[in-house]
Image (cartoon, rainbow, N blue to C red; front, side, top):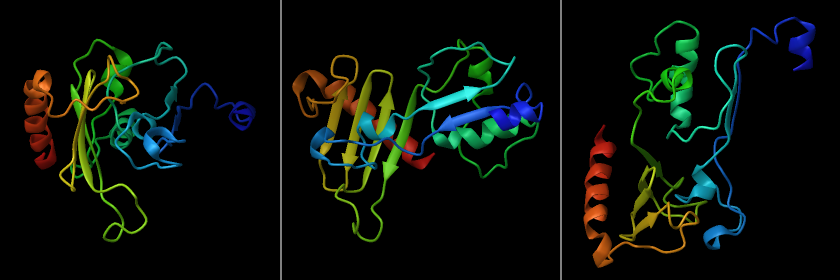
Length: 178
């Protein structure tokens, strides 16, 4: 920041602070895993400093690192190439009440046939309230993030949650082909 201030660019520069992943520190039996479907791995800092552009706030919209490139392109006044995944966050930065995605897909593939990863391949969908994960091992997890934010009680297969599990499983399949 001091270099930007000295150059007179501090009021004309957008700064984004983001991480590529979170880190478990003992969560869910993992020492220092960073590629798991749990909140400790996928919920990361994402801070935008854009002088004079947006009111400061904490936001709970579901965004992902893939949204960064379209957002930067939008700030630059250009379109992101068609092959770039993600959605520009500019609309929700300007107006948090703007419609936005209701769910998000995240996935993990081990490096070489599982080498270097104690976590099997998985596909996961997250909404504001739920997280559903399917592993290549056949294991399934369902968490109520409102009542169980630390994802300690797997509700998959429980009678009272069959409907939401089926809905999330179907939506996960849709997201995998989008």
